[in-house]
Amino acid sequence: MQKVTHKKTASLAVFLRLGIVCLCTCYNHFYMFTLEQIREAHTKIKHGGDFPAYVQFFKSIGVRTNTLRVVNGVSEYTGDNGYRIQSEAKYEPIAVNDTVNARQFAVDLKNHQMGGSDFKTFIAQAAASGVHHWTTDTTDMTVTYVDTQGNPIRVEHIPSP
Image (cartoon, helix red, strand yellow):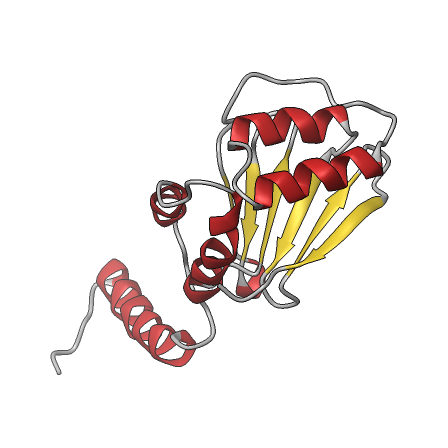
């Protein structure tokens, strides 16, 4: 190995050595998923029945949680070691009802899961029923739907695809 004498080059050499060591040690424990991977997965969802396979894909690329805000479609994705990325707004802001209608939401959710509605329709129904956001947890394999006050409305177990 050639001796490095310039300070910037020496720092770069150390950084690269550390980077390589980090990649080797962290490979199986830390995934740096991208919004591009997530966008690609979105194109494969035709209806709510595709959701379990979609979540399995998230899990495979290292997404631990995904929180979607109903008001504008912004999603936050978290992974190991504090890794976090956020999407842009997917649509113009919509109003979320402050009054929860859990019974109607359960009906709309079941219909969506069976392929009876598209995502845009489901978002409008969720907002009307008082769903502020939902969080998908790929470790527990659950989706928790939450109201504007931060209270869980419904927790769903995600079945295997």
